[in-house]
Amino acid sequence: MKSILHVHNLPFKPTNVLRVGTDAWRNNYDVLEKIGKLIQKDAVENEIFLFAAGPLANILTYELWKYNSEKNTYIDIGSILDPYLELKLTRGYQLGAQTLQKICTW
Image 1 (cartoon, rainbow, N blue to C red):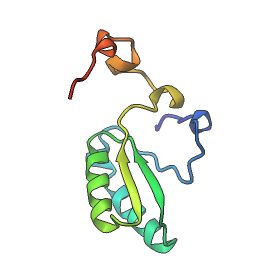
Image 2: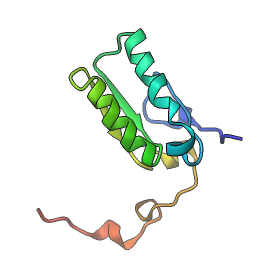
Image 3: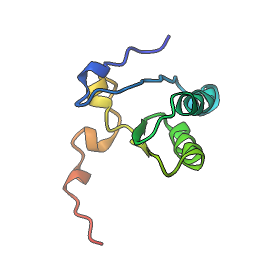
C-alpha cells in the first residue's frame, strides 16, 4: 500500500504527481516511459521537474535531460520536501544535526 502524500502542504502547486514506492529504481522504472510520453504528448516545455525517488531520481534526471535538455529542467531534490509531505524525517539536516552549523568554504 502506498502512503498518502500530502501534496496540498507544498509551498507550490504541482502540475502532475507520479508516485513511486520503496525500491523505485527496481520496481517503478516504468515512470521514465510515462514521463517521456507525457512530455511528448502534451509538448511540455519550460517546466521544472522535481524528483524525490531515491536512486531512480538520478536515472530519471539523466535520461529525461538527454531526451529534452533544452526545453525543461530536471532536478533530483532528494528528501528536501519530506516535512511538507508528512513523510518520516531521516536526514540529519531535517533533525537538527550539528552539521547544520558547518560552513562550506570554496
